[in-house]
Image 1 (cartoon, each protein chain N blue to C red):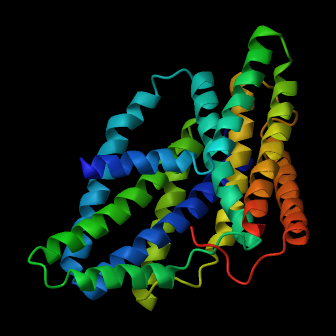
Image 2 (image 1 turned 90 degrees about the vertical axis):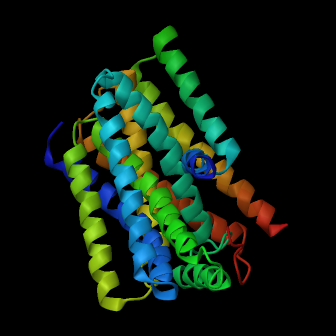
Length: 251
Length: 71
C-alpha cells in the first residue's frame, strides 16, 4: 500500500493531529519561558523530547515483530477509540455543548500558577517540570498518532515527516509571534483529525478482519466522506434539537 | 511515580473520554470479530457494519451529552 492516497492521508492526518498537540504544548512552554525564564522552559521541553525519543526507539522496533494483520486490527481498534473521542469532542464543541479550547486562557492559567510559585526556592525546578509535563503529555499523543497512522502499512516515515513538519511550523510561527497561537482554528482541525483517524480505524480494523475493500486504498476516501457527511448532519441536527447556551461548559 | 501515573492517565484518557462510547465501540468490534471468525460473516460486510455501528454509537454519545447539557 504505497499509492498516493494512503501517503497523502497519512501525512495529512499526522501533520494536523501533531499540529494541534504541538500548539498546546507550545502554549505551556511559552508561559514558562516568559514568566520564569527560558532555561527551565527549554530544559524541561528537551528532557521530555529525549524521553519520547527513547520510548519510540525502545518500543518502535517491537512493532516489526507483530504480524501485519494483527497490527492492523490492533491499531485500527485503537484508532477507532482515539478518533471517535476527538470527533465526539469536536462535534460537542461545534454545537456549544462544551467550550472551545482557548490557548490564551491556558496561557493565563499557567502564567498565574507560575507566578504563585515565583518565591518558592524550587521555582526553576517547578517551571521546568511544568514544561516537561506539557511536552511529554502532548508528545505521547503525537507518538501514538505517528505510530498508529504509520505502522499498519509501513508508512511510519511519512507519518513522522508530517509530525516533524507540524513541529517546525509551530516553532516558526511561535518564534515570529511570541505569544500563544490562539487564532489557530483548533476545533476545526480536531474535527478533521477526528474524521481522519476514525476513517483509518474503520479501514484498518476491516482489513485486519480480512475485508477486501472495494477500490482498495480509495475506500479510505469513501469511508472518510461517509463519516464526514454523517458528522456534519449530526452537528446540524444537534443545533436544531438542542440549541446551545451562550457559553459552553469548559472541559 | 506521579509522572508515571500522569502518563498512564494520559494514555488511558487518549482512548476513553466518554466511557460508554469506548465500551460500546469495543463491544461492537468484539461482536463483529466474533461474527466474522466464528459465523463466517463476510469480512467486507463486517467492515460495513463496523462503519455503520461506529456512527450509531457516535450519534448516541453526542445526543446523550447534548441532552444532559440541555437539562
